[in-house]
Amino acid sequence: MAANSAAWRLLTTGQRAGWMDLGLSLVRSDSLGQSYNLQGNQAYASVNNVRVASGLTPVADAPAVATPVALLTVTPTLGVASFSIAYTATPLPAATYLFLYASPQRSAGRSFESDFRLIKVSTAAQASPLVALTEYTAKFGVPVVGNKVFLALVTVTLGFESGRFITSAIVA
Image 1 (cartoon, one colour):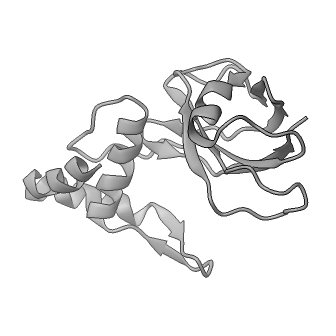
Image 2 (tube, one colour):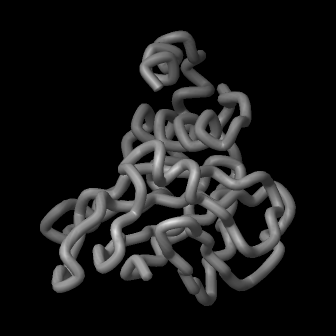
């Protein structure tokens, strides 16, 4: 990701202008809920960091905005020896990946989470379900019966992300 930030300096003036235009069409919200547009270097880093995480190569020219199809439903199944997430629509469209972010295990009474970490990236056009026990266990340890895990799922198309689908599951 540092390489993407450094690569911004190598772009031509025309390429930077394209990213600045793209940044004006990308809206984000800050921690207070206020909306803002990305600057050119932020748009460049955002799109290319997501492309790299998807296994794609970074692009120097600003692409046209691609709006990923958001998930309609998510049903997690979480146990000591299994962790899968069924979702619709399935399979995902071509060139679309599913990013799974998860929290560490929490008390079952907790209702809010802000500590999400990338656990797994699906293959393009993957069909439901997404199995993630190995990746979750490597990051946070074996799930413990009665604990709650929060999940955020994002679909990604050509470096652009959908909104997060946030849910949780209690380890059975």
